[in-house]
Amino acid sequence: MTLGEAIYAKATSTPALVALIEQRIYPISIQETVRMPHVIWQAIAATPATTHNEPAQKRHTLVQFACFAGTYEEAVAVREAVIAAFDNVTLATGDIGILEDAREDFDEASDLYRADADLLF
Amino acid sequence: MAKIKAKGVILKYGDTSSPTTTIPQSAEVSLDLGAWDRTDITTHDTSGVTKVYDTVLKEPASVEVNVMLDPADTAHAWLISSHAAGTLKYLTLVLPDAGGAEFALSGHVTALSISGLTPGGFVNAAFTFAAAGAHTFTA
Image (cartoon, rainbow over all chains, first blue to last red; front, top):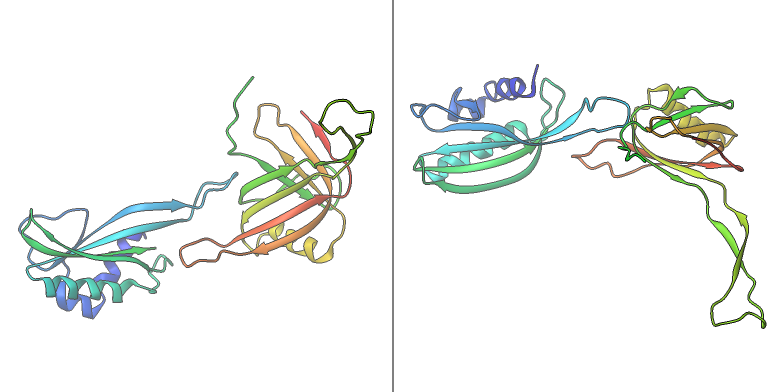
């Protein structure tokens, strides 16, 4: 199981998050027709466990969860549900989520409010 | 003349000389070949205003290594037990050059620490292997 598969499995089996976005969590990008609110996640950095005589094998991956909604309150609510679903939670891969950052913005291109959470796995 | 990438440094360990077993998951290796003690031999007859020194004795070599620790690994367990026992052991550092230059030391695991265990980090151990006498170098 990849980290992406584990993220999807956890997001779509966490009732509090499903209540807000149902199954609408996608990697990298989405179709314009996807309903609100939704979450787009992507790995934005990785720190490999580099050693002299082996492949890196393990790595920490920083994942950005961008939560889009029609209102500010809804975007923040989805972001908080994402944090509750992943922060200090062990995924099926054995990776444990660690909250690194959270921020908010208005996305001019999509005309939507956006609340982000960065989690390290 | 060649420029050599550091990736691929090998540390071999053992209870007898000329060890052949590699310590896995070494992440950072430093070798200190020892500093000379110097004696001030300046006298009233010394010309100029600069002191004059001579070398007398030299500290033996030491190796500092950071490993991504796996306590279940045989080599890492050897490091821990060697530090606990304080008995004479053998360590050879092999550089990743074409000729595989070697520094062979006999001595002791004099320091071992596990630190910096941040939530977003890895479990690392730092150990020092200090030679008990002169090392040998083979290019």
